[in-house]
Image (cartoon, rainbow, N blue to C red):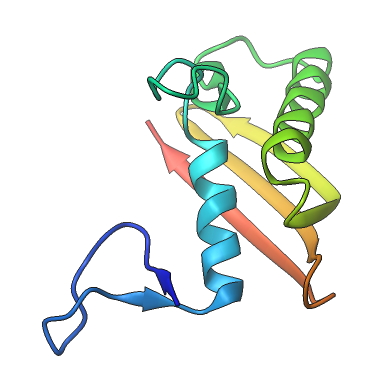
Length: 118
């Protein structure tokens, strides 16, 4: 049983739970949108992706960002998922991340898209 993220209550008033697939997606989202230094006991955890929303847009920056995000995903979630494709795009104040991955224990492939408007 996995706790749902963000933490909430289900209709019965109990702590909401998530399926394994949803839990993996939640872990990816948490890692993507956590800035390094936010977690006291894990100062290196996170991708720093949100810091790049207001950076000047260029193909070089997008390539570097994709590289660092993929490295963070492999470092922190490499035992859970295998990243097959990753796409990062920024439009004004919106940040979009498209991740295609395979869950290692079930060998199921999934795709998730995350958007943050800052």
